[in-house]
Length: 228
Image (cartoon, rainbow, N blue to C red; front, top):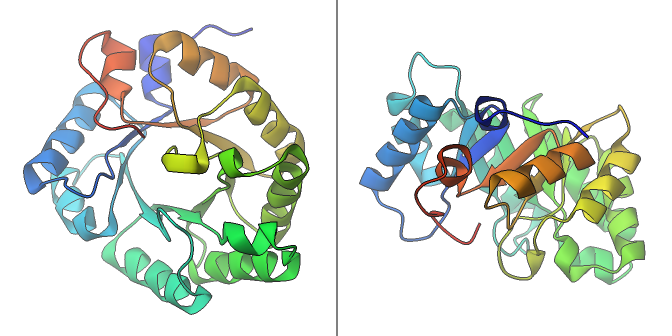
């Protein structure tokens, strides 16, 4: 088992606030935190991408956004258009939710094809699929990850961290890492609130952590910005 310094963990955190009531000042604070602690990136709603670009100009902190979130039920066409839009706005990475209902209905072709179309629309940008493991059986978790891998995503991600999506567990991240192997990477989200949990999840195979508790994790002070 590896141990990590606070600085090493910070480099793997995508500092997150995707609450619906986030303000322009909150975005500024999120970016300032990221600059101060050296986080990998900020995860924000699409409407704040341009603000974040201004605050993070000249840094190597990535601007990440969430698409098809938090329900995943928008039409594939809408998701494709939104992907093109957020890339044009300046997103470096996009976490997106596929249609869980398709998968649970046995519509595996439709589930796979939607993911493939969204990935294609990203035009080479990093894509991370939010698999929402909290809604899935063990069999469906495996199938969802395999279909997403075959559709060309850059990262497999256990959950958005919101609602029924569920929290990251060592077992789920180990499952994703076993499927991903050396083909793609794994991001973990949901319930990562302290140094020990972050360390355990990284040791299970995650390369990135999505959390609103980044400052608390690396400094030991402060509170999570949301339930994400």
